Image (cartoon, rainbow, N blue to C red; front, top):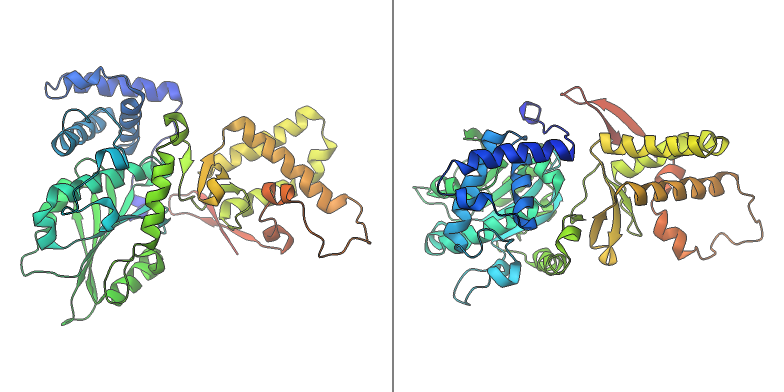
Length: 414
């Protein structure tokens, strides 16, 4: 199914701006939203570009999506916030008698599914939802908007996991989902419905643009089904064995969102909460991503040529590594906020890191070893900060090139 989905083309900034102008021209003909097209606030412009990318840079589809987005935002938050970025504490505060973000019924999980999509969890209670529908929709809107701040999610979409532990003979969820999914594109939906009087089963269906899997069975069977076929780690699903909500990771996420929203808007757009497998991670936290393994092996395979080349030759090798990582869909991410967040590096800072990587690996391979230094000597924290995770190379970790069903070469590492 993933192979049948549209891929978003890679476009220059000039091409994106031209398509955005075409989208604005289409929106200007629609009287309900025409007065908003001229809004040139950075947050509003960023939203339009994200929704344009979500629709594969198709101006006609993007205009429909943006109009649905505006209508939903107007309905939920009113005219004062329709052209502004929704903030967690300022715009989503609720009375104690209402459902709020902190209650954890909707959570953005700190993981991705097998296809690399962001995973949004929603514990759906038909009775509670009918009483608090607007609050739930506000929270879902905010959570999906937060997920789409990551370009990897824009490219691959959102995977939504819905848990319904109290099903009724008539299930109103699909009527609710029509409104939930209107402003944003949900690529995958896993609807888990608890049943005890029949064997576990999975039903496939299509709900407009969303590929749906309906899981019926016990909580444990549904979790096993999510892990086995779709690669969503069960330990990230915020439910205990008795079906109650686990808020531990969610409360951490709320604190991270508060911190992110304190940054200036240009920096917010560079922040990554959950890295993808093809990303290159730079920092102290030991995470063995495919991107790091490939990156380390590219540096190692070019080290002799790099130090034999003149400065122009070295620059060419660095540029080839940078381009190869980007072509694989990866990014160079620097660890910030004590390892809780990642910031995307632009070309020049990333090239500086590649230079340091060559220097570090050269010192490991070719520098004379001081036999008097104990193997347990304390390492420089400066080195650890820059070059964490090279043990995958020194421990002979390997990657096997695989052919993706779209004809793209990808890698699996172990």
